[in-house]
Image (cartoon, rainbow, N blue to C red):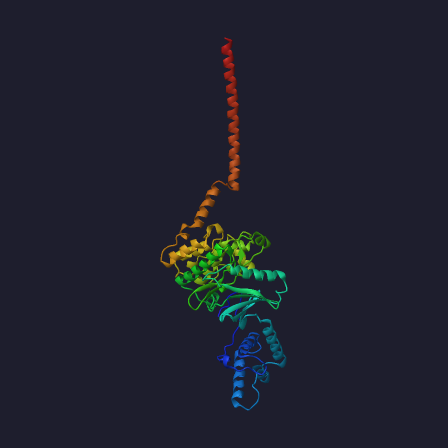
Length: 444
C-alpha cells in the first residue's frame, strides 16, 4: 500500500493472524490499535515478528482455556514472557494514548498510519460524511511550532487544490483542529515505482513509456495552471490496482509566476539528488516545466536500466554530475539493449543538461511517447537538438578564434597595417606629383 504523499512505509509484521478478530483487551486497545502497536514494536526492534506471533498464540491459548480470568492483553503477555520490560510497556501505552489524542480530526476517523515524511505523518482515514477512505497528512509537532513550516504546509494544500486530474493525487480538504494542521487527499492504494525498483525490477519499454506518458499528462495539467512539481521521482509515482498512474506529493511544488517565492529560494538546491535537474542544483530562480521533464527523464532512465543516470558516494557528488558538462550520460540503450534506440533518444533529450535542448513542453514529450507506443520513431527528439547545439557552437567557434589564432591574427594585422601605410604614402606622393604637373601645365 502506498502512502499518497510525502511518506515512507513503516515496517510491518509478518504475522498471518487476523487481528481484526481480536477482542479489545483490558487496557482499552482496540484490534486496530493493537495491530499498529505490533508494527511499532517490530519497527523499533523491541521484538521480532516471530516473538510477537508466539506471544499472540500463547494469549489465544489462555483465552481458549476459559478459566474465568480477565482477557489477557498482548503487552501483558509479552512482559510475562520477558520479551518486553514493564517500563517499555508503560512507554508504549503512554504513546498510544497520546497518539489517539493527537489524531482526532473532526469529521474523520483515523484507521492506520501509512508512513512518515520530512514534514508530516500520513494516515489512512475514513471521511465520515460520505463514508469513503481518504489519506490525511498531519504536520509534525516539531514543525507546527514554526510559522514558516505552517505556511509551507498550507501552501501545499492550496497548490493541490488548484489541480484536478486523473493522474494526480487530488486534494479534498485542509484545516486545523486542536493545534493540528492537516491536509486531506484521495487515498490511492498501490505500490510506487520505487517499490519495484527496490526489488531490482527493470520495466519493459511499453510499460515504462505508458507510465511516463501518464506522468507527463499530469505535468501538462500542472503546467497549464502555472505550476511545477520539482520532485518527480520513482517514489512519487503510484501504480494503482486498476492500472492507472498517480503523481503524488506536492510538497515542493511552486507557482512559476511567483517571483517573490523564487527569489526567496535563490541559490538553494531543491529536489532529490538522483533525479534533480541542473538548474535546480544551481538554485536558479527561473525554473520551469523543463526541470520536471528532466526529473521524469531520470525516473524513466532508472525504470528501463535499473540504474540512476548519475551515481556517487555523496549527494553533492551526484548533483555535481548532473551539472558538469564533462560528465557524459551513458545512453540507456547501451545499458539495456532490449530498449529501442528511439526510446534512448527520447530519454537523452529529456536529460539534456542544457534545458534549451530538452522538450520545451509536456505536449512535445507526449507526442514522442505516442510515436514510440505505435512503433514509430520519435518526431521531436529525432531533430537531434544536441547536434544542432554542437553545430551552433561550431559556427560560433569559427568566429571566435582561439588564443593561438589571435596571435596569428595580430601578426597578420601588423602586416596589413604596414601595407596600408605604404599605400597611403604612395597615394600622397602620387597626389603631390599630379598637383605639380597641373601647376606646371598652367604656368606654360
